[in-house]
Image (cartoon, rainbow, N blue to C red; front, side):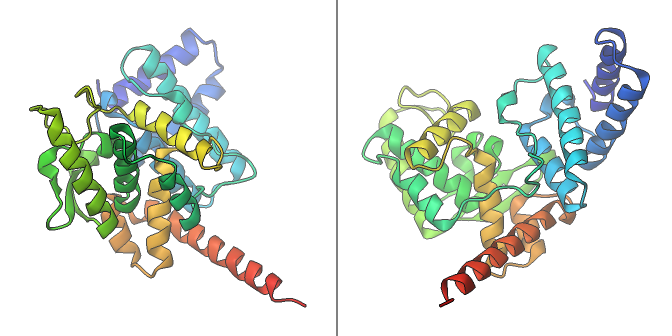
Length: 292
């Protein structure tokens, strides 16, 4: 089903079944047309949480008011809910965070919070090593959770230190790995050999089953709670943190765009605002601590 057809079915549902007014439906139409313009033409079945996250990042970079952000987010979430009810999509609606009126920039983790998150895992066990490796790859390579869970063995080159990612629109990009990422991937791959399976997906459970995005979402939330970071840590937050860390360390915006696989640089620009905000907060804290 094309995205255009899916949207028309949604609008018809709002009018005929839900009983919304024509004015309400027109507001939905405007917001969803903007969503469509950003992500382009693609089958409705291929819509994912990353499309939703990228849309919110784009809106924030354009300076929309918090009220508009909430309305537009609810429109897309309502569309996803409709498609899920029609068995077109399989998504976890709870992962689609609607912006809070008090905060429009995406939340990122500090270096300390990332360390606490990773330290919460017991790498001696297969499950602990699996979780830790997935967290490390997601964070240090800035992957979407769908890209992470769909990684195949042939996309991983540990000796040369890079991943070959096939992202949105079937576009391929090369993402380098740091030493820590290569270390944990190497450890995990050694442990994975003991499963003796022909399965080509990289991340597998000990029973040889493929790891789902829902599993990673839940395990990340458990890890965050264990680390004392609260329960609202989600996979895309690791991607946010990756981008912000790069910009804070002087990476060019176009390079960050390429590594993230964004089709438009405007989507990446949101992280410059996050980085600037964090720098201001760090400056204010340092100056405050220096007062007599």
